[in-house]
Length: 449
Ligand code: S3P
Image 1 (tube, rainbow, N blue to C red):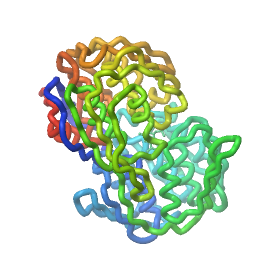
Image 2 (tube, helix red, strand yellow; image 1 turned 45 degrees about the vertical axis):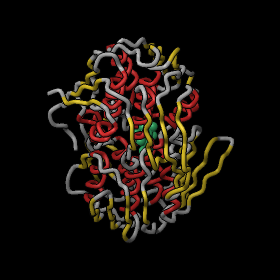
Image 3 (cartoon, rainbow, N blue to C red; image 1 turned 90 degrees about the vertical axis):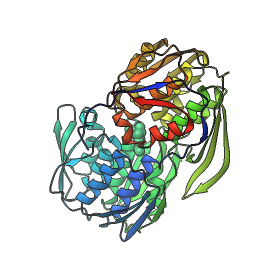
Image 4 (cartoon, rainbow, N blue to C red; image 1 turned 120 degrees about the vertical axis):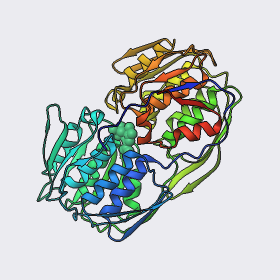
C-alpha cells in the first residue's frame, strides 16, 4: 500500500562462500495476471505459488474492490472467484496500488472498457511514474482519464460505456502497455489488435489463451501482431506460478561474484521473453548451467546452478535484448563491476521510468563504492574492477526501488568494505524472503538501525 513506514537502513558485508538451494518466490508478472484474469473469469481460479509480496497483495485487494472474491489459503495457494468479463463493480474507494506499476497499469486497462469509474493512487515512487502510456490507448476504447500534470497518479478513469475495439501500434516496448490494451480489449466487441515491433514478455497472451480467449499471434512485416476477440467467457483455471527469474537473478549473481560459491536455484521461469540476463551472464563467462529443463503450467522452467566465476569479462549487451532483461540491468551492473573490462548497456532509457531512475541510481551507487561508470540518456557503461576488487564502503540511495536495494546488498557481499543502503524496506514488494534466503546461503546482511 502507498506510503512506506520508517526507512530500513541495511548493510551487507563480505563473508564466506554462498552455498545451498535458493527457493525464490513466485513470478511477480504472472502473479498479477493470475489474479486479474481470475477476477475476469467465471468460476474458481486456483493459484499455486502466488508471490505474496506487497505489489501482488495490492492487486489482490484491488480485485476484491472490483467485486471478485479473492481468498488466501496459505503457503502461496489462493482462489479467485471471478465476476466475468465486463462484470467489474465500481470500487467504493480509491484503489491504492502501492509501489506497483504493473498492478496499476494492468488494472486500469482491465476496467477501462467497463461502465464504471475508479480512482487510482500509489506510493511516492508510483505517483511519479508516467501513466500517459496507458491513458492514450485506453482512450481509444472510449475511456476518459483525469490525472495530475504529466499523466501522474492519483488518476481517475471513467470507463467506456460502449467500448469499441482498437488497433494499437506500440509506441514504447512495454508489456504493461500491451497487457493493458489486451485487457481493455476483452470487454470490447470485435477484434482488438496490438502490434509490437520489439517483443516484450508474453505472459498475458499465454494466460489469455489458457483461460480460453480467442487470441492469435502472427509475426508480420510490421512486427508481432496480436489479435484478440472481445467479450469471451473466460473459464476459471488452475495456475501454477513458476519462480521469478527476476528474483532468481539476485542469488544467481551473488553466487557468481562471491568466492567459492555454489548455489542451486530451482524451478525458475525461463520464458525467452524474460531470460536475457542469464544469456548475458553466460556470454561474460559465468559458470551458470540450466538443469532439468521442462514445461510447467505452460511456461518453460529450469533449475539454475551458479558457481563462483572469477574470470568474467565485460560485454556489449545488444539493445535488442533490453526487453528480455529490463528489470535485471541493476544487478547486471553489479556483476559487471566484478568482471574485467567494460560492460556497455545501450538502449536502456526505459530504465529511467521504472520504480526510480535506475540508470542514475546505479551510477551514483556504484561510484560511491569506487566503481567507474559512464552514463548517457540511453546508456550505462560500467568499468569492471576484477573479481572481488570493488572497494565498497559507500552508502547508496534506493529511492523506493526494491531492485536497486537488492543489487547493492549483493554488491556488498563481494566488496572489500561493506556496502550500505538507506532503505531496504521496498524489498518486500517483490522478494519478501530476500534477507532470510540470502542469510541461509551464508550472506552477511544486517539492518543497521
Ligand atoms: C512487467 C513489465 C515490465 C517490467 C515490470 C513488470 C510486467 O515493465 O519492468 O517489472 O509484468 O508486464 P514494462 O512493460 O513497462 O517495460
